[in-house]
Image 1: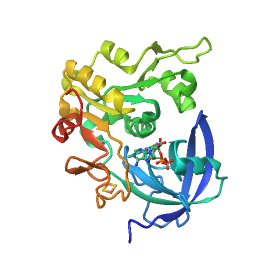
Image 2 (image 1 turned 90 degrees about the vertical axis):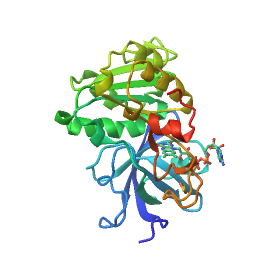
Image 3 (image 1 turned 120 degrees about the vertical axis):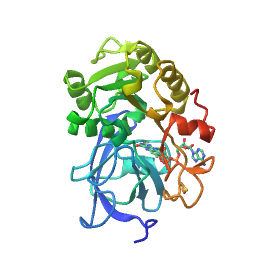
Image 4 (image 1 turned 135 degrees about the vertical axis):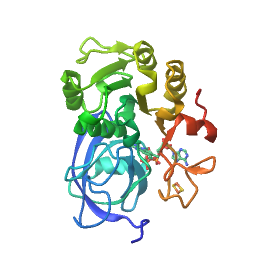
Amino acid sequence: MNVLLPLSAHMVHHRKLAQDVALFQLQLDDPFAIGPSGENHRPGQFVMLSVPGVGEAPFSICHAAHIDYLELCIRRTGSVTRRLFELGENTLVGLRGPFGNGFPMEKMVGKDVLLIAGGLGLAPLRSVLQYVLQHRESYGRLILVYGMGRQAEALFREDLEYWIDSTKLDVCLAVEHPAPKDLFPADTGHVGMVLERLELTADNTVAAICGPPVMYGPVAKILRSKRLYPENVFFSFERRMECGIGHCGHCAISCRSTCQDGPVFSAWEARSLGEPLEV
Ligand SMILES: Cc1cc2nc3c(=O)[nH]c(=O)nc-3n(C[C@H](O)[C@H](O)[C@H](O)COP(=O)(O)OP(=O)(O)OC[C@H]3O[C@@H](n4cnc5c(N)ncnc54)[C@H](O)[C@@H]3O)c2cc1C
Ligand code: FES
């Protein structure tokens, strides 16, 4: 099997989540093909999605395993994503993967799980959150801290409503620009302000973080001040990717491939890779 060759797939459905962000549901044409199917990935892994005649780009799988199709939450940014938003349902696309290491769910077993998402970073962390809810008895406390500019930008609103009402997790929203008609209870400011006031059990908490790179330094600093172990703090890093399988060198951070050894690295590893985290 040539892992550089995309498998043919179809876009089953897509719906708007926010301005310039939509949820795409995709299905492989061959149900027996070994590829991204919605059932065989780890939270935090990604796929390479190609649009014929335009190009290919990496996207995080945004749900936990075991549904009939693959869900990707995609922001319209450049050539591939612009074209994707124009495509109608039932159009042909290509898929490769799943790739990358994903978040270490086994390391979180028995521990409190702290998820820190900024903007589109909720996409991969939604798969971690769903996974923990599916295996609720294996994990301790579950906390989601989700930051956004405005509540109008909130992704997965139905999920958020459900999560906020649920007793199975704690949800803390941080909104930089609140508005009078905002639906959800939220702190005004950024995720750091919420983190500062959270009481965490330092030696029993594993944190998973995904968001804009500018968030990473301040978050790492706060978690360090709360005495979380750097080997228990995991960041998902974004690099431009071509092959997705560690061959081309496009996504290198120091001597490691983000596509194969990452995209998830612990704060401990990030330090040795020279990533600018204050850990
Ligand atoms: C592991 C991983 C997971 C990801 N998950 C998601 C996800 O779940 N959802 C999502 O929406 N996105 C995700 N991304 C980001 C997504 O892959 C990129 O935004 C991708 O570039 C979009 O492709 P495009 O062709 O639409 O945009 P592009 O045409 O590639 O342009 C995207 C942006 O990058 C700039 N750019 C173009 N070329 C370069 C270059 N050579 N160097 C630097 N900047 C350049 C452009 O100006 C534009 O602003 C992920 C990326 C990685 C690495
Ligand atoms: S994208 Fe080619 S080595 Fe990572």
